[in-house]
Amino acid sequence: MPGDVGESSVPLKSTGNHQSRNKNEACVDVMLLWRSHLKSNAQQLSAFLQNPALFHLVSSIAAHSPSNDDTNNVKHHPFSKDGAPGTLFILDSSFNPPTRAHIALAVSALCPRPSSEEARAHTLRYPKPHRLLMLFSVHNATKSPAPAAFEQRLGMMQCASTDLAWLWQKTEKEYERYPQAPDGSYSDVHIDVGVTKEPYYHDKTRAIEDSGIYSRFDTSDESASPGPKHVHLIGWDTFMRVLDPKYYEDKHDPPLSALDHFFTKHELLVTLRADESAEGDGTLREQRNILDSFKRGDKQKEGLQPEWLTENKINVLDQGEESKLVSSTAVRNAVQKQDWDLVRKYCTPNVADWVKEMRPYDTEETGEKL
Image (cartoon, rainbow, N blue to C red):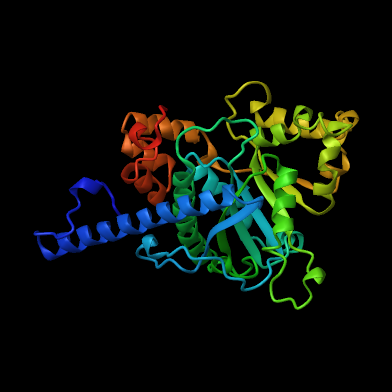
């Protein structure tokens, strides 16, 4: 782990004691690995943007890959088709940068609390094997391009997937204490990093389906493979944008009928905002009131079907304290102040180190100001 050692202060050949030399050599190895990721990401992005494909898988790791001692041992490698997922969890964000809130959302969604009832319900609702896709869109419907550069974001996503893999190992060991722990191993979950050109959720899912990447595993008859259920993991603010008619009204009448195809097979798993001090729809009570109004059909004229909620196509997840007040904007503000302790508080270790060492928000690197 680079820790607090900057790139310029890491000599290729150390003259200190054996321990210092090993630490410096490890830092050099990590920096070389990360620069390799950055170069590969840039090359893949360039090729992707020049071809008609709408979805591209950048890298993949198995959650059991990292050792217990050093999460940087993970090598991101080209995708290998080693078994069809029954459920594809999709964590879709701008990842600018990834925060502990992103990681907490993935853990909450894929690792239910070790109670027998919850574990059985989770297994029935989300068929195994599970796979997690961290997805980034180069065409965001609501945000203009800004630092960090896209290849930098993919690198930070790869760091986040490494940290998440390590965290799943830890969670699995903790759950071994419970006789009714969820069936199966979290360390069997693969974590992918992908990119899409589509800005809207229903189009992103279609692009992933059309790519055939997740539906052609070990089948002699490709047409017989329907592909996995997609479960998009989103926060409350994103959920409200997904259901905002203005994004669909140009092509669909009623506007939200654009989502009909999506909800025939796929689901949204929505994390309620935990900040009780917020006003309006920021409180948990107001958020649940809005959900209840959707169930009553208050938005049916715009195409929102109450069945999407009553038939569990839209599910709600309560998240813990870690999701509070953790935003990518807060991280970027901390970077601007060079408050690296705060960056480490908001980001997982590898992401925090990448942000400091690879300088994704440096104006010299991005050509833009924060």
